Structures are given as C-alpha cells and as structure tokens.
Length: 303
Image (cartoon, rainbow, N blue to C red; front, top):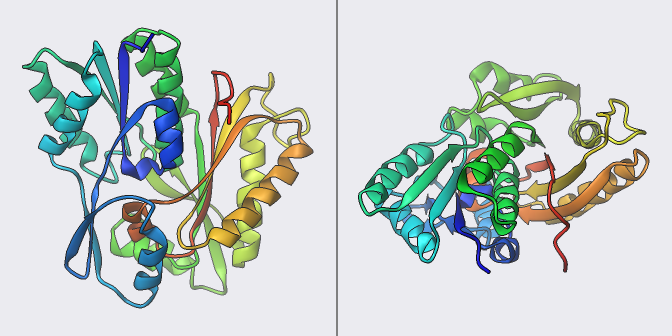
C-alpha cells in the first residue's frame, strides 16, 4: 500500500539518485549558470564544474520558480492526500519562500502541502527528507511526518571544511572576517550550521587537522558509550559524507570516520556518500569535505 503522504525536497539536499528513488522522494532541481549557460542542478556535472571553477569559470545559481516547485508538488501528490516539502535554510536561499508560494497555489486546487524550512543544508536537509519518507511509508499522518522532519533537521549536525573560503565569501555566506581566518598563518575553520546560517565551529592550524576535527566532532555527535561526549541513551544515527571535486579524499574521510565510530559503539543505521550538487558546490568551492550526522528512527534500508 502506497503512503498517503508524498515527500519533496530540493537538489541541494545532495541525495544520491538511487537513495531518492528508494525512499520515493521527489527532488526539485535548482539552477546553475556556468559561463552564461544554464543547466539543472545535479551531482552528475559536479566534478566537471569543480574543475571549471578552479580554472576561473564564472558561476552563478538561482532557485526554482514557484511554478516549477508547484509542478513537482502536483506530480508528487498524485494518488496521495498531502505533501511534505523540505528545503534548505531560508537564510541561504529563497527556495523555501518559492515553495510556500507553490503550496498556496496548490491549496486552491485542493492539494495540501506542508512546507518546512530545514534551517540546514546538504545532507542536513536530505536526511530529514529520508526520515520523513520513512515516516510516511510507515503510514504516519502528515502532521507526524512534518514533526519527524523538523525534529531530524533540528538534531542534525553538519560539519565541513573548505580549502578556500573565497567562494563562500563571494556569495555572502561568510563574512570577510571569517574569510581572513583561513589565510592567516594557515588557520583553517571547521564550519557548521547554526540557526540556519553557516558558522565557524572551531579553528585549527592546517587543512589536515581541520579534517581530523570534522571526524572527531562527527563521532561525538553520533554518540555511543565510548564517545568523548556520549549522548546517553545511545540512538541510531544516519550519516552523510559529502565532497565537491574531491572523491578520493571523501573515501578517505569516510574510512577515518568509520574507524573513529568503531571505537565509540555508535549505532550507525546507514552511511551515504555523495558529491554535492553543482549549486552547493558553486558556493563552497572545489575541495570541500563534509560530514552530516542525523538521528535515524526507522529500519535500515536494504541493499
């Protein structure tokens, strides 16, 4: 029996295509413009975009229109009673505002859409969508699916490190003061999300050490009796490892994280590894690595 609630998110969630299909999540693409040519946002062209950005290509991004969002919601709603639409932080993009406009349009057609500002980005949004899809598949009402999505997003830890803060500064995602930290004496900030915005979690010297701190902090967030900062009682977590134009480094980071978690007794339901889609990559720049830790209520996905 199909669930009564459909789940929609946007491409910045950076969910692998097979994962989105497996959970029945509809993904609405944002737009990226590279040297004047517009294309839909997906991970397929991210590696090539990272190379072009490193070579100085001009890149800009834009959110989907309310009409595009409405079309996706309408298609997802076929055969369903309601839609839960989960999007990246409204402080980083106007996508959630467009989703609210789309929801208002569909309300006139008798389709009820619940729009959620996840207050986070990338896997923070994506894993909230996965949790919502699990709740919907379990037959929960729309209000319960909304609650699961909100709680998952609120309890999610997003950590990332970039080789160069220039791209985040250009897009206004970090201030000039934060950007200067990254060039002073080799100091590198570990970045995260708080109150819907990108923040500096801590600063260390050297990129390698910053990556190690991402792993250590992710392990702390995952909990487990052996974690330095345990979260009793231990809860199941789902992980996402992200990169942009740094596939080999992402594999290494995932291996380091798995080794760290093995010593803590953390209960890991699933680990997803994906390249950030082009729109997110355009703002963080080539070489970014990140880890997302989210609570996982439902059963582990098979396969």
